[in-house]
Length: 164
Image 1 (spheres, rainbow, N blue to C red):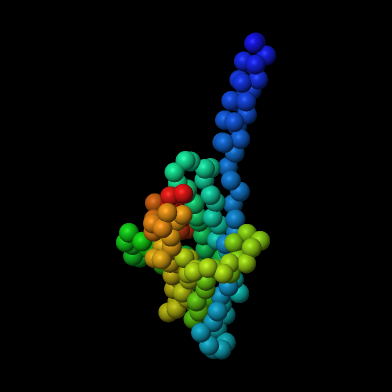
Image 2 (image 1 turned 120 degrees about the vertical axis):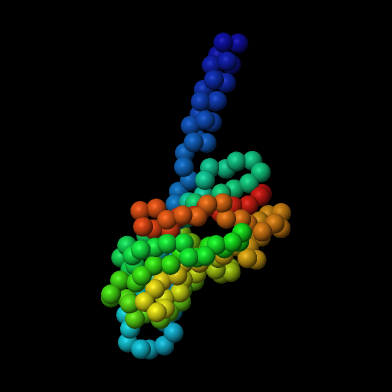
């Protein structure tokens, strides 16, 4: 009896430890497509990070962030509504003449074929990062929602999620 209680106690401790282990972050690679061959310098790709939170019954949450320090400064939230948020920042001089767009091409080691819910626009000396949940459905055919949007240490951060 005593050994069963001990095993049960160890099982509870192990379960609490493993459920507290954070999920691994995934790089979200966005390929930059220039609008034309003007000779302007644009980055080839931009990499963002998204990390799923540990599972909770009934839903899921993904935390994201973008480190734009190499390409832009003064990132702020330019527009927001229930389903999208747009951050804008001033491109650094090297990229200031870039006119381009970007969408998701890889998440982690997997090629991404779906609708790009994260997009970039480079134009008029600015970069725009758009997180758009329009048309993004969760497992129950509800629109995924943006739970948090901000700028931390000069970089965009967000959380989005849905039901399972």
